[in-house]
Image (cartoon, rainbow, N blue to C red; front, side):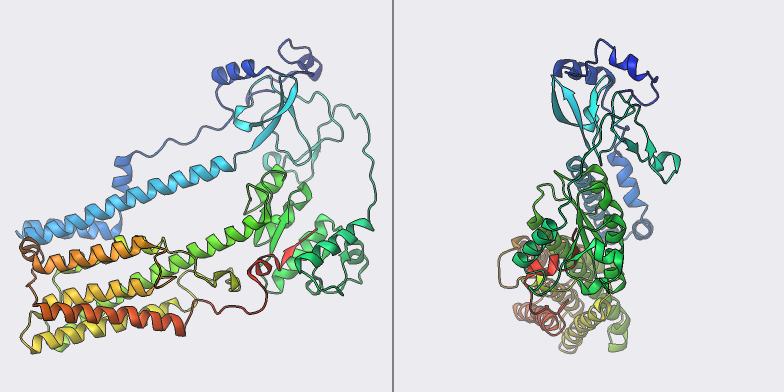
Length: 529
């Protein structure tokens, strides 16, 4: 094996090298020494971004720049209380942003390590599977159908060896690399056995009814197979036919998953909405073409992966609804308040405090919500659907309008009765948003996500502290409320929880699909061989 950029040696000369013995390959000790001397067989990764640069990237955000300008102006005018709140918000936002970036980078690195390519090398006289990064100069590498060549190498012996060099040369056809052909491979026809086996598997899994016929590649080629989407079980199909099957189901409006582990499965894996390749027995070509690679080769893992993906997507939508509803409510309160006799419903420091407590810990905690009970009985979402789509905007506007109406009603009542109405608006607006967060839970009434309960309790306590603690009163410009007013504010916040639960009941994310079980929903449209 040669390093990239190294010299090429004739095959005969390579076989005569004292350190390369075709029968035994390198010893483990020698391979370790060469790995230390030459380094890993991989492209150098980009250097990690230092923390100070990540902080600067966070501070370059347009909204953060606006806050920095606002902080400078408030300091220039001597308003140190508002400036302190603004700087606190900037600090918290920057810290949270940097931490999330680092965690995301670590997660991507862990995924890359799990999916690292491997190679088969002869070490100590036996075939071993080693990481491609551990292949060293002089290694005797074995390459079979579907494998990716781990490094530049001399071919010592081969039979019918073709290499796909399209990524390097642009040539669409494989290039022959064999210096000597040494044998032919026999083929055994099992045309009768294979359809019978596929039929038995389909019956056992419930994919097809017993009276449905197995459609083979020969039937598709000859024409009597008809519409490919009327077929549930396929057998002995060619790569072109697999591609046609996947495309036919996609054109019919279905979300198609394709499982495969061979070289000829690559095109269909890429064309499918979800390409699935086996992590252990799958070829490197199939794994690179796939979107999902179960590391344990267990089909049940696919169900778990789909469930986890739906959980993450649902939590993204859950947070968007919560954040958009809160932002809408704050805008409406500031715009409509003056028309109701409240010239300045909230001070700038109070708005920043509300946003810090509502979108901070509770927003992060919503991302840890568990999967909803009926998630795996929902039909797949359309591939072109965006996260804020499928009715999320109307729901957000409705909840925002409701929060604003409750807040303004509390403010008008407090003003008419001689109570500190601005502090009442401050408390009710933030507390009602927290009620919406609790009403957004995937499994209400359970303790499956205690972090959300802790986050809401902490945020509510800090909000109350902003009304009752003297240092925060001076900082935020609030006045203390009587115990009766506090009870009223908490009761109004409960309305946010109730209305959010009612809305979820009347307009669920996706209506459950009746009939087939969760597992069948996942495998229903898998194109099989």
